[in-house]
Amino acid sequence: MTTFVHTQFIQKHPGVERVEGIVAKYQGYSQHFEGAKGLAALLLGALVSALLVVANQVIDSWSDGHLMAAWIALWIVAFSSLALFDGPVRSSSSKLRKGLQHWMHVRAQNRQDEKTWAVAQQDPALMAELTVLMLKS
Image 1 (tube, rainbow, N blue to C red):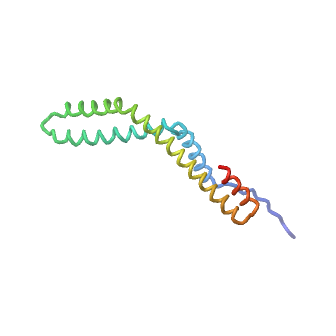
Image 2 (cartoon, helix red, strand yellow):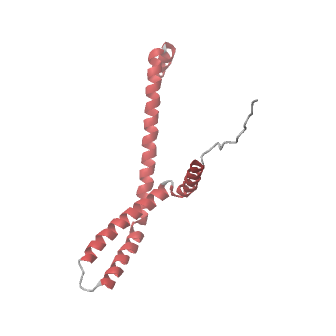
Image 3 (tube, rainbow, N blue to C red):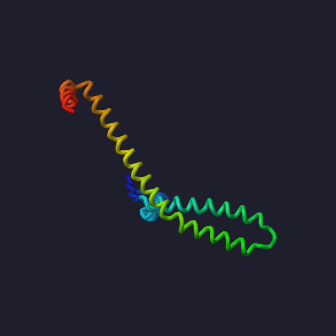
């Protein structure tokens, strides 16, 4: 006598589903930081952090009970650096992004030209067309 058992197996691992959900959630957050605006915010944060570290080193040398004045000076440095460097960081990040896009476009064009040339080395008709085009320009 033969008995068939039909079981329903899970098609996806629950841990994989959780990780995919987390990745999808954080990809939605990262869309706000794409482009020049996000790069400017990142550079501005790095610049302000560096200034705060330097200000903290200076404040640490004031160990004679001037702690309140030191914290006020630290926050003045933080907010003034945010105000002063917002415009230049935003414009430089925009220029950097445009330059990077142009560089990537030129590289892709060069790769495509190399592939076309490699194919033309094997195909006489394509080589003849390329020769005519090079002679015209």
